[in-house]
Image 1 (cartoon, helix red, strand yellow):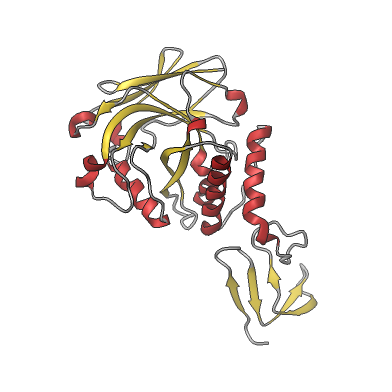
Image 2: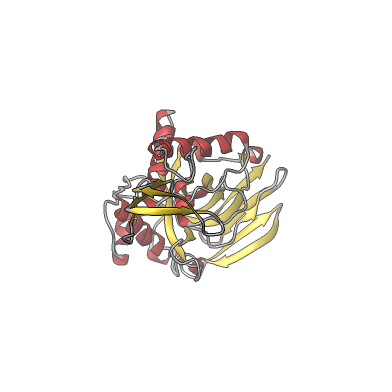
Length: 304
């Protein structure tokens, strides 16, 4: 027979084979021959390995399963979404939150494993949306989260809209204030380290956040500073702010690239969480957590 051609739909993940193919058993015996079969690539088909068009509801189904994971406080399965679908799931989550009267207040920059480099683990930049409902003032109810971790970050407040990629020399034209911040990371896949597509679908693990008092932004604000994380008053983690993109101001630049690549604009007044200087500190009920950046400020949260 002529060699068949294979087309993988980049959006749905469905696999269409053009031509005649043989279906064989484990011993290589031909069970049947098919012409132009279509295989499931999204994992939702009820007639695997064949496609039953369940991918048409893929975004809706996965988004709901992720919400169920949060509501039930039970880890969700990894989905292995395509890049396009992953972004659609993230946007679906934002739409759901806005429809439930939450307000978009900013974004977080994060990192996740590049699925195209499985033999050479490499992290790429991704982002997640932050809404007012995610902000913590003094406390956080950890029982509603799956695997929460506290991270020490720098928070930026925008003075004007980011609507494209910006140059490092322009950062202070966009940032009016900065603060010490604590991001609470909680991937709904639990302790499993997922590839970027699943991380994007889960809104980059954005679960909650808090930040301290705003300080007017100046280039020298972040020079030679250290980020420290305290648990019940004891120093647990410490790292220089240069652990953030080599220079924390670059977090704004790198975020602008990720936003531009997906056509997302960020309004003036929005906040940006930079990505963590430290590794995540698991959060347990009854403990207090404080992020301190000497020269910038601090923020403290009590876990209940």
